[in-house]
Image 1: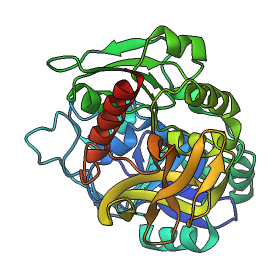
Image 2: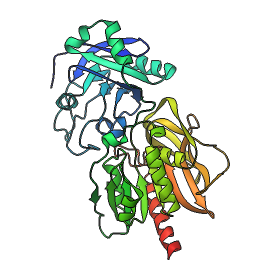
Image 3: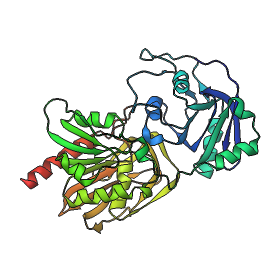
Image 4: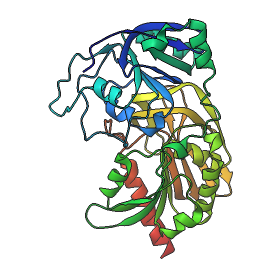
Length: 382
């Protein structure tokens, strides 16, 4: 583990700065500053492709105590642009740990900062909104504050960013079902987490994971019983190619399930707009109501954009009647959509993460709902 704690500085695009100590790799990084309220699951957060180009501020004060293992990665690498913690663990204490969190950050070149007042930083982001940020350590930290601020302000903003293709698989691959095969699903990878096809496979689904650039012909070639769009980074307003693909999927009568970015793309395919939240939802303790059952779930989130759809009533579209199926109880943000044709469910999506490996697992039933949807669709076609 690295023990030298040379000075480091965090610079926000509005000019506010926080001083601290170097953590992880030494150097500089820029990205969008966001905060996560999760107290556990930092390894899953760091390896979630949805965090591409984001600097994650942990609100939990003590981070790193369970170290880093070889089993919990959600992808093949760390995707966050930078990492901000208050008190890093001196040493890992989990029997599953293979190395320290800091060693892994350093190995993968992720620049971080510690000994920062993350409470004050989080309050600032809540008041001013998510914004660009830079972390600077080592020799570069000695540059003038105006120079560092210029580097931050020169970085691209998240609004208008098209990032899914940067994190998605370049080649299609198959995750086989566990036990007897029940369904075939074409899963469009926009930043998919490894636990998603795993949870489908546990339900007897053969999952064909396709690149973000997949076409309707690519989807049809799989002969799927259903289609899935994953989570992913960036502005959904840039995903018109995927929205057009989804319109083709719905016109073909294929059952659809989407998560996070997949929810936003469904919204846009149906004719709704999307917008950037002030500071987004990130963490594993967000209350969401499933309006179809009245159940309140504690859920995992990671999204800075949301669908602009009416909370009450149904909206008639080319593809059927659309209703908001889930809503965040903190701020009434749309957290799910349903599409019904002739009163039969044909597509649904959620903004949060039912596949969250670190938990909570309140919403895992949505994968069963997808299986029920595909079963019903098969029966109707028969």
